[in-house]
Image (tube, rainbow, N blue to C red):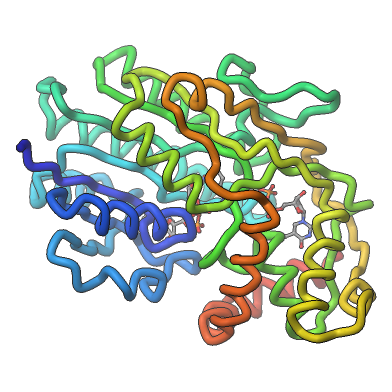
Length: 352
Ligand code: NAD
Ligand code: TYD
């Protein structure tokens, strides 16, 4: 069997940690190299259960550092890349767009260059898997769905940086014949998500009786997928996807923000033994996000038809598991919301 040394970038983050755990435990014959800078969003506590595995190595490095990327390829004989490292929060991209350019665009190009140089045109059995978002397609204002052929129309600095990185990956495929696949996934939820994103932020604020900041009128729509189903889709595409192809990933599960927040409030009322309606009193409408995309919705028909992937659980099951995880891991929440996060929270929500 060919030895595979799979570089997973951003493996200490939310989705990356689920992908690393899945690959380390499911593929003991593969060596998994988790490369992460450990920004505010990266946390090795997410991987305590696999850190001692014989087929796992952690490397702290910055994808913006081209030389460091070359070294990692050389030191570990990298045969494949699953690239997740990124700045991922739209609100932060509005206040600091440049860090999204340097990490998401330049960081991705550094990895593409490192792969191209290390693999020297011997691309047989090599793969560069770029993990992207449905936000590159822009904002829907009718009842249509994003297809793989939908023209890119990014509307936020975050989605513009991800769109740019997708274009670079395709350009390296076309120009240098670098074997690649790209997936564009809808909003993820589940355990280990940093509580600046909607679902864990609301769970944490309900738990601690803080206001629940709903942007605008709460009418924006997002399409939610359980993170472990995203990790299973990444596994499927990594092993069975066709080079040069793009696959959309989603759960056919659209929710208006305000309806989702009410659902979370009622689940939390039940779990915390509160009277029905008690948590919903915390809902507070705040100033809308600048340029707020109205609706995202994915048509995941291609990956279902061609690769046989579909979500394994319903939204109701996923939310129950997710709420249970945050309630059982309040220490994790307290660790990640201390320090720098407190400052971000004060500054971001003070303006609303
Ligand atoms: P995250 O913010 O939780 O994690 C990002 C990880 O990247 C962190 O561990 C961070 O330390 C690391 N990182 C950041 N900058 C780095 C740098 N310069 N060098 C090395 N490591 C760095 O993000 P996430 O939600 O897990 O998203 C992972 C990927 O999936 C991203 O590429 C994102 O665009 C994409 N994605 C996310 C979603 C979602 O709903 N969260 C949906 C679709 C696609
Ligand atoms: P988010 O989790 O930041 O994901 P994205 O912007 O990438 O879709 O936000 C999901 C939706 O929830 C989005 O429409 C913005 C909204 N939102 C709020 O209403 N309040 C909040 O405090 C946050 C973080 C998001």
